[in-house]
Length: 573
Figure 1 (cartoon, rainbow, N blue to C red):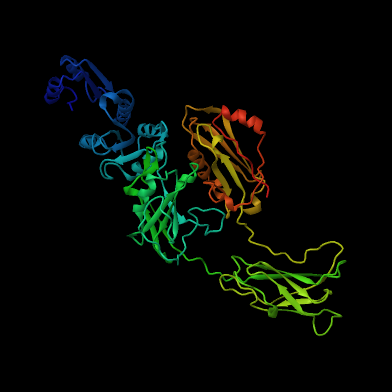
Figure 2: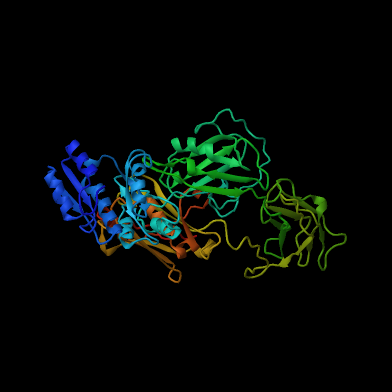
């Protein structure tokens, strides 16, 4: 510290007693005059330098740059992932001891001067922060010194928005099974009540055998490793505000996308209305040195809506065919599942003879396997047009106890050309949706083998089910692309042309799959139709035939020299 127009005695004595060789003046001559600089030379200081700007904010930004780039070796450990917002003197002076010791584990933390709003100089400084430091992602921490009178809420909210670092981790809680019936396991799957016997809490480790209790999925916004992190996450899971009994926690091996989920097995049952919560403010998760807290999340255990839909029965019989037929085909359907027991018995099915039929009606026998969705009713004579098969009410029951209504179907005369007599439809938005896989090796700078990310049509979007057929995913690079500029991935969606284009405008060759996932899911139009993330649960989908955007021979050569991938297009179904 010094007076503006003269070197204070205490400062001069300190410089002399400690044989200071270099002095850095902070501020222009309006703050620290040229006379002070001359006095330093007179004391025997070898070099005197000045950092200045047109405002206090500009000076603080210049000082931060100096600390991180120019004299970090002289200063010692300077934090590269944390900055402090201060009002200026005296707040900056009072905070100096904290910024130099306890706030960042002994690392120096550079202060940035702000006002009621975020100055342009500080905004530019934050925007210039890198997304990666070496192989690790930068997750910039911003701390305000003082209350809202010193650093306003608006300023504090604007700072992380302006920064160009990786977003903080977030977490959502879902079931570890596809309870939403959309073909994927993720945080959109509601946690259901569990009636199984709870397991014991004797073996708590990432490799312990799962107990019989319910399993939760903690779905993170970015990759978390499967060893240290799962041990930490056990300590922050609660049920109704009380520490949960956790008997097992396991991360997913495989690609970076798989590693964004940790499955937690509980040793207790869950009832409807129970509140599951996690609070990550006290621990940090991540990959390697990329460690981040992840805030909190809650999920309420909900019972599924009661199934009130009756099973359906359809009956088809053909009479007068070239080869005489004496059977009715019976098919059953349900919105969830049929009960796994025998559905039809002989005493629940009878036939009424058609015109010209005999009296009494011919006998009928039913062949049906327990739990099967079809049965055959065999009549004791060839079918005649008008023969009507009747199935009594309650003959078929689903897993929820709903029983079928009484149903009948008449044998129709064989047609020269087939005709549609009845159509049994399933859900209009099917549980299997169009899916594309972008291999890990398709993104330059990302190692590994196997599937990288999976892009899946959403079950509640306009590309669900068969509507997702014919879409193509095209990845290219802008002609103005620069690897020296901050990462910029543009996403555009053309519903009419059924095309999604992902363009790498700028960015380093070390762009990660996590960056690509964030860009895709961050686009509103894309997010309304698709989701990008883990390829888990793809085994549920039928084998599909990918159609390439263009010849692989050209693609292989192009990818070796480019940071941009080209993915297979939408499959035919």
